Image (cartoon, rainbow, N blue to C red; front, side):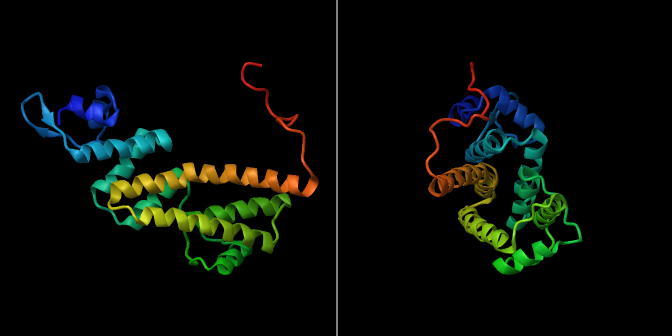
Length: 216
């Protein structure tokens, strides 16, 4: 297909496609003449992946280039998942010095006891909570972990069903970003609902501490 057709079918402006080509996010088309190239289904798929990473997840051009680079080199799926998590969730490299609470919850839920960026982030957060004197009880921490384990199982199962790395990246990226925000919203609603069930119905409308509505 011509560049104009690729633009129409993908919903991406021609100027943006040319920018992605220059930045190495999109592979060049098959040359037809000195000034024209032909583009195929792979280009359409890649533009969808870029759109997901840019618009739904908010990655920079440099971050998208790094992610699609893994796709183009045919990286292992676990490496792609690990890279996405590091970029989207801003995880540092694994660090030694794990917490007792982290050890306890990993054992209680049955997660692999291996050093990862996610484990380091959990330990760092638990250390911060301990320093502030607001550590959850073992039972509370385990309850949280078991709840999110069910969510993670659903997200990973959805990613595993991806036919190729392009689809894997799109599914996993949405799971790590948009679905994570969805969980936060659901948790807020659940906490509100449980509070109503425990203390009685509050007056409808926003809290007195809520920021004013736009235009007021």
